[in-house]
Length: 164
Length: 164
DNA sequence: TATTGTTATACTCTATAACTATA
DNA sequence: TATAGTTATAGAGTATAACAATA
Image 1: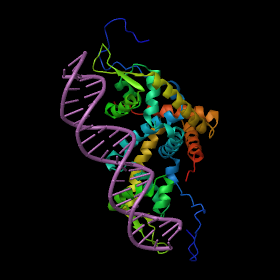
Image 2: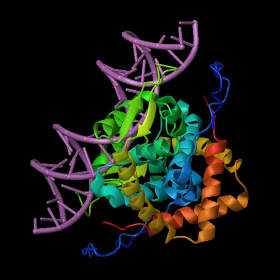
Image 3: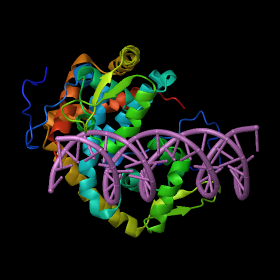
Image 4: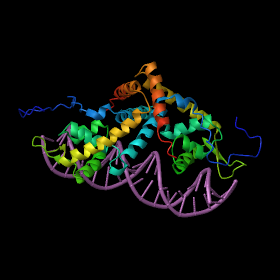
């Protein structure tokens, strides 16, 4: 129990405020996944801070690069987002001259997404920063842990709810 | 390259849309962490759908239960949120009669947070649902994977940026 | 002067529903 | 009738800054 014998109390904020007891919550996958993911996002944001490219933007560029000509619907499926959420992101990337939307002959309802030359260079520059971010994470765990972590995360993601 | 020899194309939506090539992105911790975490949140939401208690609400109840009398500042630190973000959440929990804010004698600026009797029962009911959600996740991986996953996630969360 | 918590505000991301244009 | 994508909108969650009360 905390010492409360006298009126004397901590005044320096240097004194580490006793960390909370997490209890059962601290043993759950859900809580730890959330905390770690948010921590990862924080370093990610630091890594790409100067580029103004955040959230799914890099993933979108990387996926278009790997799958030139994919549609917005396919992209949405890959990152599990409704196409209406994708529209503003793609508008932005197109406005910045990184991505092109092309109406294919065979189906004029859809768009084929492709990186422009500028999009490719931007993507490569971002990739270098994201790579630095990944190496930052790698410093915290062993190579073996990394391999197992990714394997386990994939099993979780794949195992959960097609729910289409 | 996609077959485009004839006009004939896929018409049944039952035809599985060829999964995208994730490329380098698919080997990163950041991407897999994000996808798995979001998948986990989806099943979590299904588990507590009827309660209207989501996201951090359960974590807040659990943390108050484990650390009765903690302040909002301490709580914010534990879940890495600004206190201004906590205010509406605690307002809600107080309005629902689950949590009490008590001004302690020794420092009338702060609040001591405690669960009410009703808060305790609600928390236990929620815990049962969250536990079911955890078991759903457990079904996707081995016990050994679970242990290692949590250990690794903790290392990542702990290793990143005190950044205070 | 510093700290605890609240308010006002603004920003981002998200999905739902209604719409268009194509098929 | 069904699909690809857009628009309008609403909801949740977050942080920043200014503020009041207290230390």
